[in-house]
Length: 215
Ligand code: AMP
Image 1 (cartoon, rainbow, N blue to C red):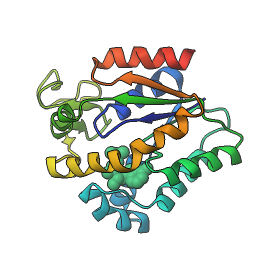
Image 2 (tube, rainbow, N blue to C red):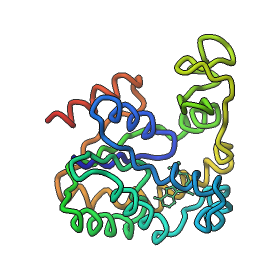
Image 3 (cartoon, rainbow, N blue to C red):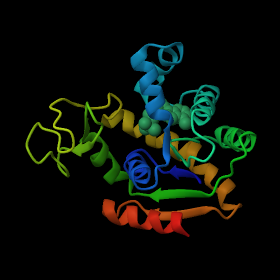
């Protein structure tokens, strides 16, 4: 199964992708995670992407589509794929069609997480993750049970994304509105879009996604 999770920054794509991974053994293909890893490793792609990401703008279509192709090749042919944060432009949507077709895969669902933009800024600017296992937390909505200690792995170091500040978040949302939202009609025309209320409680969002995946 091949699924796209679509929605503005902070809609919960990463969280829901992780849950699909845990429940179904699918693989999460997050271009944001791949780019952050490239920046950290100081690869040529990382060096090119760093400043663009810090501004909240989009990295070039060629770079992200190449990353997705490579990552997909590292999956077994039977492993399901969850595209998280890709495609983000019409050109990327076109590339994804070709990338999937080349590998004998087809897109099953595009799940759009609908959210209220004002709430997103609050969600994003408060979030942080465990530096060891990646579990997500939030200043107001989900602190670790024991302050400073990760619930899942006991790690004591946490990190915040440098692009999770208000100014960059506003740019990321504007990019979503201008370049990503317009690709929905492409998938609507194929009858594969399912819309989920991303403002609902996290477990309810998961339940709604489970229904779509099981259908
Ligand atoms: P994300 O983790 O999905 O919020 O992505 C973080 C940042 O990485 C974005 O603000 C972009 O600068 C860049 N990025 C991630 N995925 C893409 C993509 N598919 N196309 C272009 N830029 C991307």
